[in-house]
Image (cartoon, rainbow, N blue to C red; front, side, top):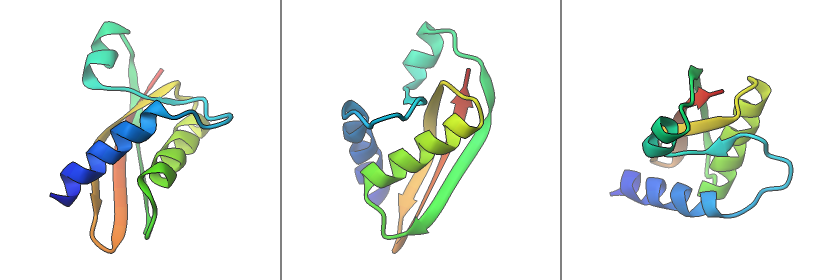
Amino acid sequence: MKTTFTFAALGLASVLSFGAAAADLVTQQDVASQNLQPIGTISVSGIDASPTAIRQHLSQKADKQGASAYRVVEAYTNGNYHATAEIYK
């Protein structure tokens, strides 16, 4: 249930705009339709972060790796949060 909530919250947060974040959150359908090429994976972890903060951390980390987009492949909260994403060019 918490995983479903986290994915829903991350999806909702993707609609919002965040300053200079260059890497965009995408879906599997976006990856296929835009012919994005995978270049690796990233992950973020911490204590008590909002879905918005998790998305910002993923976007910043993807940007540092030279990615233009990322897709969340795992996310959970259980007192701590963890999210893993595949990054794309």
